[in-house]
Image (cartoon, rainbow, N blue to C red):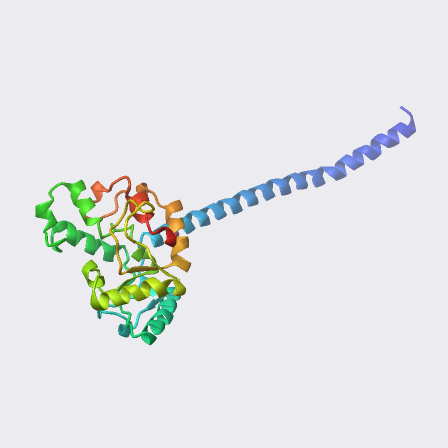
Length: 275
């Protein structure tokens, strides 16, 4: 081996000695970058899981509306009862505009029910199930002993806890949840006005008369109006996120008789104009 070749070998050795730390450092940096990326992805996944869990709780009414900044307490001058009632701020603002317009036409709009969280809805449901509240003048605990049949009877006008649109703070009941009230006199005048004018302010009658477009679900409720700019998206989120498994094990009387069609034929079976 001549001096020239020896010189090349020496230079190559020096180059290798110089590059080893650089290559090692680069490999370590790459490994560290991969670890950091994996940790970040895990963090994002955990945050997404938490976000979905919080959204599910909201959709199922598992929260206190009085403790949320996006809800507002409705002044008693706009309600029929003295109990505290809450609405999402946007829905309440729209109601105020609608109420002012109705007043110009000699119509006084009053809210009989607004946000009902899971616990509130559970009281309504459990009272009907146990017979503490009569349904069509009957004590269902005595007149309908079969669980599935009693469940279906209550579903004619009442949502099971975890499935009510009233959980969202977007829906209101106007005056009385009594069909006959809206057939004559003052009630008919109010309903006729709402049919013509409520859509202008974003409200829609979600449970209309059953027909070819709505063959299942709750009976017609002329008192129940939903604020669509918020509720339309929440309906779709409920469809995407909530399953019967989410209702499994929730605590209310008769929950073991939850029908398989509860979500599709009740929560999602609404007036097509409200979708």
